[in-house]
Structure formats: C-alpha cells, structure tokens
Image (cartoon, rainbow, N blue to C red; front, side):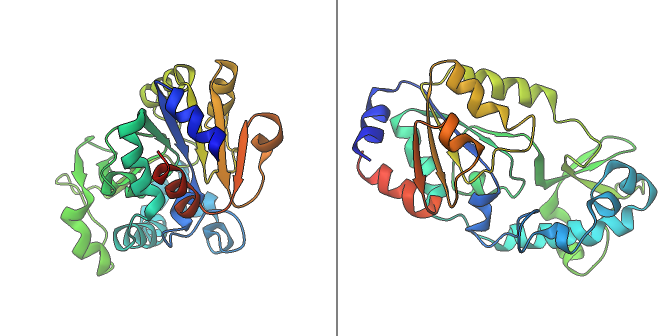
Length: 241
C-alpha cells in the first residue's frame, strides 16, 4: 500500500479503467458469471443489433430490467473515491459500464466505451432523449417511442455494433499519456477495451489492479494487485493521501 501511495504522489496524470465488478458492488447484475444476465437472456435474441431491428419489443424486456436496476442503485464508496482522486491527479475514467454511477458520484470526465442507459436514441431520425423523461412509463412496462413513432433504443453498444470510435480513440490517448492506470473491477478479457491497461503499461505507466480474483492482467501487466472489493480497497488508498 505504501508503494501505491508513493506512485500516486509522484504521478502527474492518473486514469481509471472500470468494469462490471464496480457495478456489481452497487447491486447491478453482471452479464457473465454465476448471477449474470446471460444465464437468463440469450444475448443474440435480446442484445444484438439484429435482434433490435427485428423485434425491439423483445429487446425491451432486458432494457427495462437494466434501466430500473441502474436508476435504483447507488454509487458505492469506490465510485466516490474516484471522484476524490481527482484532487490527486485523476484526469479521466474509462468505463465499460452503462449504469451512470460514475456520473452520480460526481466524477468529471467519463469515457463511456459501451454507451449509457441514461440516454435513449431513435434509430430512424437520430433524436436523443434523457431516459428519465420516459422512466415512469418504462417502469409500467410501456416501450418508449420517438416523436416519429419509432421505438427508442438505449444509447448502448449492442452485439454487432462497433464501439464509439471517437470515445475509443480518446481512451487510447488517455491510456498512453498516463503515469498510473487503475484497473478496477474488470476481467480485462473483452476486446478492444481489454487492451487499454496493456497500452498504458507499454507507455511506461504503473498499472494498479483491484479485483476480487486475479485476471489475465494480474501476473503479466499489473505492477500491484489488491484482492478485494473496489469499494473497500480504493477508499483505503484515498484516505492515506
């Protein structure tokens, strides 16, 4: 822990890379694993671009669950510690999560690689809306529609869709320009996002990983690995600064 504190004190630019483990600690179901959504839903049937184009009503069974869960959950101390870390050089958060919890914890610069459930977009006319405008009707089981009458889609990346290239390019720049990269609650196996810690490492950054279990990064890439919950370990670090 003392070495990590020294890394932070010497760093000019810190970046955080966050994954599903952060959200699980707030009570949000992961996609994979023991209690993962893919045990209940077939991603090809409810979470792919083709599925949405063919049967958007069926896809909304999953979207409704995700939106309700995200709006009902609260940021944990790990989220709040990242906001505090901005006082010590944290420049941005690169996240694979779509639940908006980083924003609700008052972090400033968040790069959402997979989009956000807090926005809805029309595939027909490209209008965008804040999800909370339709939240009551979504909870009632109604499917939100655009002014052009087409069914709206959460502004998230579905299977068969590319990551937003502008966001991805900026994430790469952030990774290549940082002195420390925190890898928090991510399995680091889903590409291209999983390449971000490796890019930081190749550029000379220290990689500090916090996770419940070791990942492909732990032995080959991470300079320090802390086993445990992000919501417990990260506040311990920030409190020592």
